[in-house]
Length: 216
Length: 138
Image (cartoon, rainbow over all chains, first blue to last red; front, side):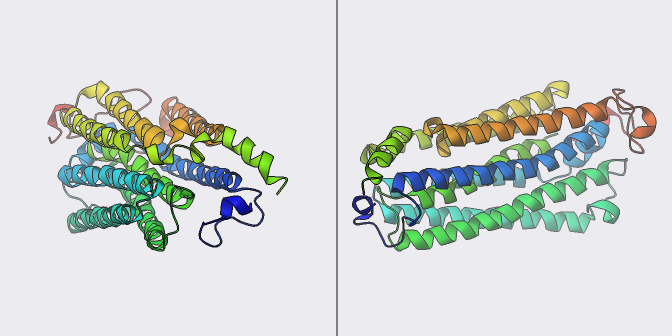
């Protein structure tokens, strides 16, 4: 252990791990297990979506065309770019450029804020139109059966995804703090790598939400 | 110390990227994937806007799956990870497939009283009152 830990910041290798590479492997394994549970969590909602889109194809198409496609497309570009900057942050940590890594993390967090801002504008529009989930649905432009179900699923899916954006922002802010403390380098970057993995998952979910909600 | 020597070597074999070649690590694949993701988003946008009928959903899903594969393999490093994360990821996909296939299969083969009010029956095309397919807003 001692030769691996030499020169690394205090407290990186847990005393219960025989080596840093074993700890890295265990950390990645744990993160991927967590991501698998996240994939299955969203899969439940996507399955509900599949059922009701199958039952009400025209209502889903009609309701979808009242969403703000421009906002959805801009948000797709924002999230994809934020995934790119977080991948760059990990890269810069790996090649011993912690300042560049920190800049990339700040950019990622700003784009996450931008995403939430655009989503808030969209939600405000829905509230004004009374395009709301369940029994609160009173949107006058789409009144056929199934339209309320589309908006229920829309709010559940984008809402859960939005919570994940907030969680991801918090994780990345914490990683940013640790990057500024000089914790990550070519010798140890697993922490920033796992934070990035979570953010990529948030991007992955949106890659499917965008065509399924906005482009029916 | 006697234990960490051999175990360290074993892990190096499992995970060769950890110990070597860090300074040659390149950001070019990330730039390429980013541009590809933007182009695929453009493709989804234009194919989606044209409402290609029964092909719309398969095309949208094919593009989304391609984009996801790029993110998972390059951004999330599953292309050069050890076997365990790959196994976990593929297993989660198999269970998503099982969930989707049997649930949608169930709904698609039900008889009329089991479908929700206002929904079309089985594979019959949906024709709600006052709205026909060609009357959908753009």
